[in-house]
Image (cartoon, rainbow over all chains, first blue to last red; front, side):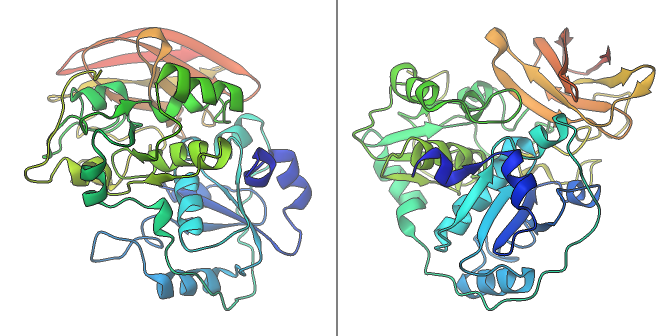
Length: 280
Length: 109
């Protein structure tokens, strides 16, 4: 996939936001962001309420995803343009999620809501009325999703990329610095993981850095072996979806998985190895 | 449950203005950095505050609140606060954080 296959810019969205066959979707952790104003003709998906199973820690199943997209008026052949806040973290998570269920034509708005706002582009409160569809999803593509046993088995064998901040990686913090530090899990990182914070892949305005810069970042600077398969993780799997997008979609690495269990799962497992400090 | 209508374990994302502390003037055991962004004496409600570490390493970012407010729960130490606002506005401030203290930073762009 080349960059134009997976990214659009704001001018493209301005030109195509009302096209039939195009669905603009905002995905934010803070769903009130959509309600205070969104890109014209955009609909909302709530990453937690809509995409997570309400009881188990897992995604909604295939039937649930089909029901969601049908209800929101998204068809299987629609071009879905995802954007959101937090430098597109949750939009990238939704992108990966759409790919997981086999939606082929999905792209990110480069820079997401942040660049749209900083450009002073129009935000509206109107809710678009999309005709309901009968969406058919595919079975989950496990080639892009890592589960815990696979992660433990990958220690020392595959590239493990921890995309949290250096302080979370080292064990000095348990959560990002805008959240209270009050969690009960163990701190640290998976042994042999390289720490490449997601933020290094993004410019200040939320857009992705150039392919050359990204290749240098992960290869020359972080020392990832591009000949090996890779698993990315963070705390709950959405920042690492951003890095999965970079490695799999922009740099076209063939075997990259997102471990959505991430540190909240790994750091609570009994008996697995944990490494503290800044890594090697 | 914290004072915010959010459980920290819910996610890594940043609500506008950041997560409130139980009482705005008490840090408890946290090292809080908070403040407001103004332009022409009016709050800047569209914009972002970023906390950067050594070498401008990104640490965290929050969208500004309706009142131009932001809040971070940092580790003790010296940080760079960077504010981004529409029109290419950008301002950097050096801030120090320590446990049990709310460090106030007011930024004009």
